[in-house]
Length: 398
Image (tube, rainbow, N blue to C red; front, side, top):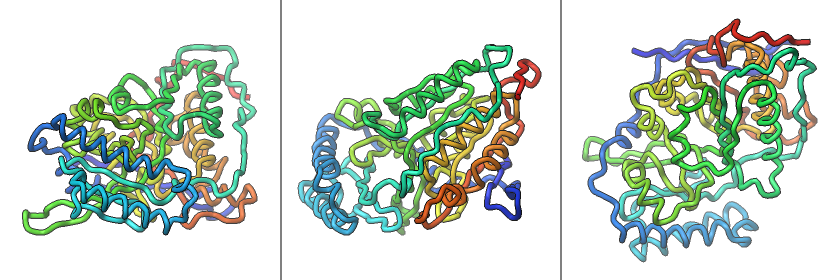
């Protein structure tokens, strides 16, 4: 039995951050993962792909409209229900597959070919106030005396299309800064499903994307229908007929689904893409909401899939996380690793600097209306993982 070692970061217990550590047995592969990894019953035909494209055009026509953006969540729910009922009447989706997950604010459904889809009603959670906190260089002269090669990194940026983005310039800055320090960093601002099959090319991968839980149903013991949920990472890659045909196996195996006409990946995608340990040695830091669980329930399904694929260590958040808090933790953690610290030491430094959860950070910045449940980071895998072998590079800190 493989064991999952985790760092669980919570609130202050006194003047210092409390860091509680636990070792837990890896959660068993869920029914979803087992279901998703079975081979599809058939192939995706051109006619089926065309029907999906027709349904997607109707869905995006709704979700991307100014009218939908101006609606309350209750109004969106009604509009989404009407749209899905219309698609079901046209035999483009299965009427008995439509399910509304009130907690996550999303409809799930199945196209008639068996591919899974979703339609979001709630906005992606974000900072309820713009509490700008610029990136700082920590007062450490990390450039002292060296520009040695420290490895390579990829920032998979899928938060938005970068146009008029308040997030994107910060990641451009990170890329430039880390490159100067010797961590060769690439920035992918048009992340595709295909791109996520090449994470093994990097020592460090940062998944900067939205995330949520997807509800699905399956037949249990062939007699009963069961509903389950699973975390997904949402991309900005818009689906179309030719991509659907290209991703057909992943779509039919439910490793990739389509939410609001865009592709999203489930844990089984990483498990399949990196079977046999192909991700060996890579460190993954995910900024996606609910990557490691929701409603204070720690769920290792996503992190587990990456660790089984050979990842050295994985960091992700339980619950929905504020954007700026998450970005600050990425920034500080990577900077500390560049200075030669282990991933555990680096994450400890980051939470000591910015707070052990995002509500603590939010209130410290003068925020008045925090979201309901605090998000905190969880570290799984090898706590002693580093970007490069200790002693290979010496970088003096001020």
